[in-house]
Length: 491
Image (cartoon, rainbow, N blue to C red; front, side, top):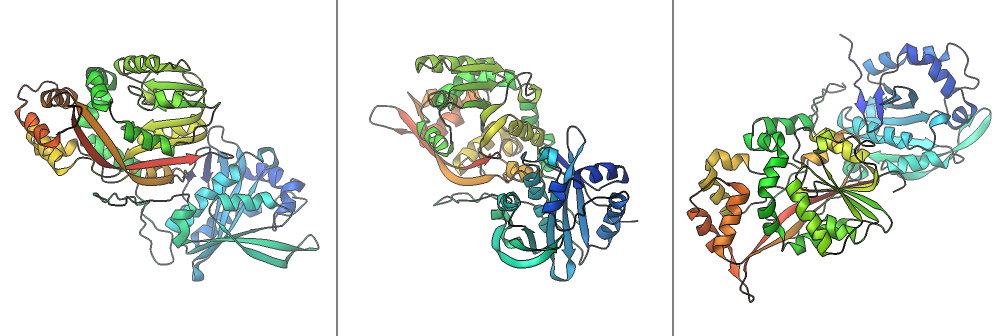
C-alpha cells in the first residue's frame, strides 16, 4: 500500500496533500507575477496544465522520501492560501524549505504559521538533521518568516542562481535538529534548587532507516486518558460551578495571604496600559484584581458564582471598576458571541479540562497579542502533604488527586504549531490562619467537606504551621511552577 502523506494542523491552517481539484487555484495564485517573481522555480506565465503536472509529482516524491509538499488551506473556510514544502536529500538527512502564499493572503502571517509547522515535522517525523531555506535580497519579508520560525541567517551566496535571465544573490538561512527546541521559541529556566524534576519532553518518534514511518505521541489523547482514569477529575468536569461554589469561601481564606506567588506571576506578565485582559478561571480575583490596576479593562470568567462574588468584593475593596464578570464554563464560551477578543488572555492554574487541546486553541483565539498560562511543574505537594492525602483518601485517592508528571500543555501547544516560551521557577505560597483548628477546618472544607474526623488534619497542621510575631499560624510552601506564554504576529 502506498505511504500516505500526513495532514498537519495549525491555528488557522490545514496543511494537506495537494489534490488535482486544487489545480485552478494553484494556477491563479502562483501565476500572479508578484508571487512568481519571488520564487526561484515558479514560471511566468503559468500556462494551462502546469499545475496538474506539478501536483502529480507530489505523492510519488513522498513515497520515495524525496519530497513533502503541503497545500496550505484555510482551516475554517477551506480555500487554498499557498504551499509549503521540503525537498529532501536523504543521504545527508537534510532538506530545502520552500513556500509561497497567494497575493490576496499576504501580510497575514500565514507563511510563518506554515513554516513553523513544517520545520518540526521535518525533524520529528522525517528524521532530518538540517533544514535550509533562502530568498532573494529583494524579498526581505521571506527572511523574516524564516527568522520567526527559528532559522538563523548563514550568509549570502552571490549571483548563485539565474531568475528570468538575471543573476540573483541568495540569502541563506538554516536550522539544525539540535537547535529545534530553542528555535521553536522554547526557553527553559530550571529552579535554582529544584526539589522536583519536572519533565518537559516535546515528543518522540520511531523511524525506520530511510523511511517516513513514525509514531508520534498524541499528547491531548494522553491527557484525556488521565481524566478517564480519575473520578476526581471527572467530578470536576461534570459540575465545576457547584464544586467551586462549595469551596469558594475556603479557597479565599487559603489564598488571601499568597502575595508573593501573585507577585511572581505578575512579574512574568507583560500587560500594557490601555490593553484589555481576559482572566480565564479568574476565581476570587487573585490575579484579576492587580491586573485591573494596569489594564484598561479586565474580563473575569469563571463558572462559579460564589468565586465571582468574592472577586467583586475584592475589586470594590481596591476601588476597581474597570472589570466585568462572565459566569460560564470555558467549554461553553463562543468567542465573538459570549466574549470579545482581548489583547491578552491569562489562565492561572485553570487548565483542568478533559479536552485540553480545544481549551488551549480557544484561549489562543481569544487573544490578539499574547497568552499567559501558569501550571504545575511536577508534584506540588511535599512528602508530608502526600502522607496526609493517603491518610484521608487512601492510596488510590491520593494518586488521583496528584499532579501530572508532564507539562502536557507545552506538548499539546507544540503539536498545534504554537511554540510557547517556558520558564520553570519556585513559586512561594504563604498561607496564614488564626489557629491550627481553623487551618484544619479550612483544608477539610476545601478537600473533603463531608469528613468529620479532623484528627489527622489537625496533626498535620500542628507540624506544618509556624507561629509568627503577629500570632498568625503560617505555612510557606515552595512549589515548582511553569510559566508558559506566547505572543502573536507583531506582538
